[in-house]
Amino acid sequence: MARTSAKSAVRGTGVREAAAQETRGNILRAATKVFARYGYDGGSVDKISRLAKSHDRMIYYYYGSKEGLFVAVLEDLYRRMDETESKVAPDPSQPIEALKAIIRFKLHYYWDNPDFLALLNSENLHRGKHLSKLERKGEYSALALENFANILTSGAEQGLFRKDLGARDAFLLVASAAYFYASNRYTLSAFLGEDLSAEESLRHWETFVIESVLRVVRAEPPAGD
Image: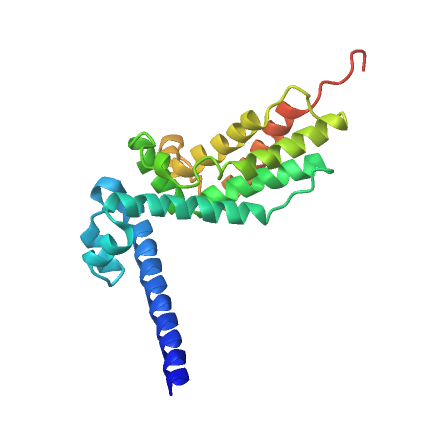
């Protein structure tokens, strides 16, 4: 009898933990949507709890405060981007193709994740004060910089790329092209009088960015060639 009760207690604990994880996950997903739409200031705890079909007190129980929840949302965004980028796994022994793969990944990731862009815009308005509280701050850039460093080093060793390029500069060049186009697609479309969301426009921008970055990183031909 005692053994049966012990097994029941373990099962009960597992069920409660699963329910708690589901509640935390629902709150996190709802918060991502609300903060992306209304920003940090406009994203109220009430809006989040209603979308999550939960209660305000559960948000405070699991995340401590609205700010704690916003930090958790940012942490989750960077974690998911890091996990997605880890699956790209470009082969640095083929530096040109590897660099193209990284560029395409950045362009498509920023374009396909508008909530990510909206939350970055919101956090920039707050001068990054919430990002400074991430538990793993500094770690999320490690993979991206390592990929660029490996590709640039391989390309330089093969005589294809310049030897004076830093991974940080290459990353910023690609990320800026991806971020600016995606985050300003609507205003730029109105300003330029063309739909930058059209498939043809997206393909053109991808080709242009790849060609531009390759022109920047390619080694100068030997004098006299």
